[in-house]
Image (cartoon, rainbow, N blue to C red; front, side):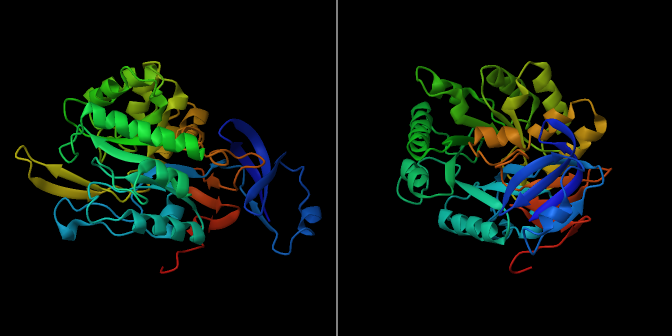
Length: 390
């Protein structure tokens, strides 16, 4: 059992100072601060712990919907393959839930390895899911079809695809439509989101292939989740129109005035909100551990960087410090919004019945305490639980 006291709770709605009681991996109760009796509760469990949040901002653990936790890359050859992530990387980044996927390499990278990495991270302490498929069509799968993967593999909740990118398979409108249909049916039959995560490149076609694929069908726009939409200004403008139609938009987190990827996160979020896109339709993810290659006009790779997993937390901290967007909205971008879109009912909120995923930030919005499934993984800013091989 774990009791976090004196937490300035955003669940993501602001609840004021609260005490949060967790047991068996779930949140049991959220009390007004000081009304829970630790002495009485301590008799219920031999390993009862109490942590004082000191009035600091407390929120759900981050749900990162786009992480290459089993490695990615390879655009520059075998030496450019990024290695798998370890548990402590997630802890330092405030991430308690992650969705893993393949990237450019759907040839030598295996979904079986991705699945086993997801299960390993789950055993070590965080919650994980994966997407089937890769950049190209036809999609690599675990069972022979996208719908079967969703129905038969517990951790598969959607499909990955790339469009408008020179590394994609440049699928036809009919191929995209068929992929969306397959993942939708798989989602319906399995009771999962069946989300089609679409890697967006910088080619001039932008979101047009997706819009054309939806045309004349009853496939809801919420079935699609275009990501990396902050890649360039033209794509942001197109994405705003997509969001106004009810679509979800995923921004690759890029803090600072000179971001590692695309446009600065705070500016993109502000633009989408100013255009009238509902805040609930915007999410942030890291593309963590993914390769970020740069190419010249000849298509030759000129450099390679690795997506930082902590970019989501840093972007959240930056927006919280600036204060131009409400705290509730900022926090929802990485908690309740992705949880709702991915139909992860016990994630994204600090409420009774939800998983015990709680992040306490210090006065500078750096991680101070982190609990995942009711277990403390960070205390006083120090990682206290590490992976098997760390």
